[in-house]
Amino acid sequence: MPLLSPDPVPGLDRCPRCGGGFHCGAAGPAPCPCGTLKLSEGLQSALRQRYTGCLCLPCLQALSLGAPIDPPIDPPVGEAWASPSAR
Figure 1 (cartoon, rainbow, N blue to C red):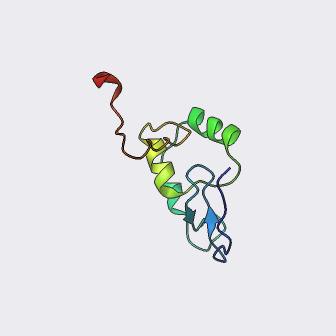
Figure 2 (cartoon, rainbow, N blue to C red):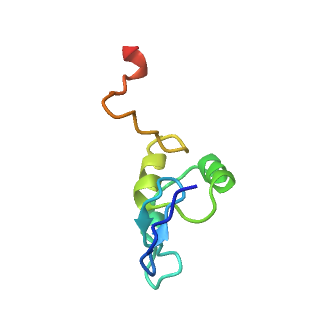
């Protein structure tokens, strides 16, 4: 679970996938920007099983393009990730 900042900004939501702050517009007067994304039924089901609440738009965009459901882990400082084909 992401760590919450000690002084969260009122009205700011926290993405359960990346921990970033964002404003969920699902209950707002205008349509939420995430409503423009096309996510497969399988991906939607997997996200419901893995996370509670809304994800931020950048995470949803990445997922719609095939990113893994769990966010990538940053490499240790000073080390670079090698692509699977480079190993």
